[in-house]
Image (cartoon, rainbow, N blue to C red; front, side, top):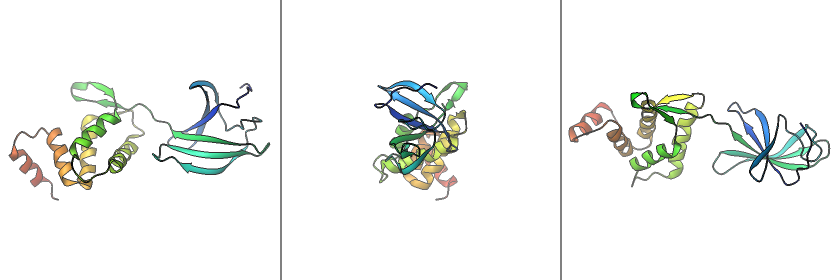
Length: 185
């Protein structure tokens, strides 16, 4: 590791899902410059710093921490984010593609259209499902829509039936009635 003048750099630290810091990436004009293994002071490069203030971002995707160096008492800010791995979705006929959160959100939004469900509730629903999948590298599309169905069942019955009608290929009213009779509300 070499020391460089970093007055205008932004520090970002990233977390594994088990909430341990593994590195800080220093960014300057959106280019990676140096990767550090410990939390270093940006002024004196001392590795003993303490957290003075900690807050989560509005979308809960990052944690903002104010830190103070115990050697020179310089204060600086770090942003901690959860490291995510690429989740592969196995579709029918063994086709594979990357997990796309927006695609999942769009399908849920279609099911909850004109229902009294906020976008925050939908984001929470997706976040909870993604948390279930965080340690997996691959998931089937069938598992995804079953998880969505289970979550929608608890959230809204109409959205649940709408989502099921698309993913279970309902063709007529009898399919709806059979499905509703199988599930007791």
